[in-house]
Image 1 (cartoon, rainbow, N blue to C red):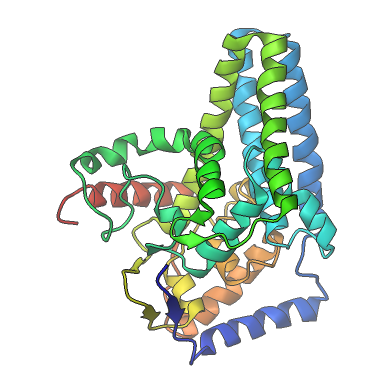
Image 2 (image 1 turned 90 degrees about the horizontal axis):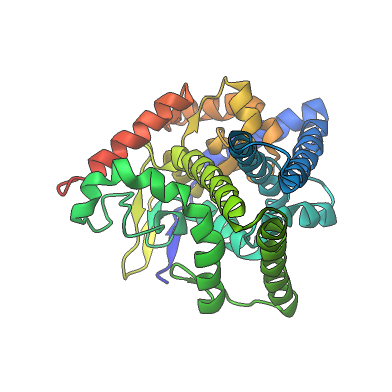
Length: 357
């Protein structure tokens, strides 16, 4: 992997915004980790997911009701990923490390692997955001062209149409495809996984087997393979679409910038924090319903600057970050509504589908 460094010789922006954020917490005597608002989400979402799962196993419903319940279960599971797993894996769910580790295992309960995801997301994506050649989030499939430095193929002309089908199957591919590729190659895109301990090997295989037992074997036994397959695909389609769209709106929209790393070491001519601001976008900041459902990930700029601060604080921090961006002449990319952000993503996908883009 080619080395990428940032010109952090002048870190005035990050120092200023961090000082202002620290002052906010100190003046209000607040902890940067989660509070009752976050814990209430876990208290609602986790029992709800278990209840829906058990009720679906009972089979006391008609076909249409079963489809709707599967959709609801998919939404509930993805909300757990947004609200509980994401904070926990960043160490911002609780002040206690063991609590974060425990709640972070919700990633494994959803079918993936916490250990691999933390390297992919916390380390690579959060450090080298939108840098083609190193950010694994830009390397999803040759069928999707996400920036101009990626090779154009004729099929990309239609990517703005078929991309949502790929999003719908993304969690299936993630949990039963790319997880295993990363595990066996010990590589995330071009970044090596330096060490996988015995404990992580055990957790990886145990989690995958438990997923097969609870999400495949048990429902097939109680419902039969056809109802199970229908519900299973619906759950994953909902999860895949929701996860993909939320994360794409944060980085793959018209207002964000992209970088590229080739064969030679690269120095990015700005401090890391300024890079994060330019490659990231917020959306629907005033919509409290969306903020609740997506775990504050509509405040993605704040999250990238302060990933170890719980998302429950992001609405307040956004005012501080926006003010500091204005003072330093940095762009504060945001879309007032989720609909506008989706339109921007679609336009960018259409633009990147052209051979001359």
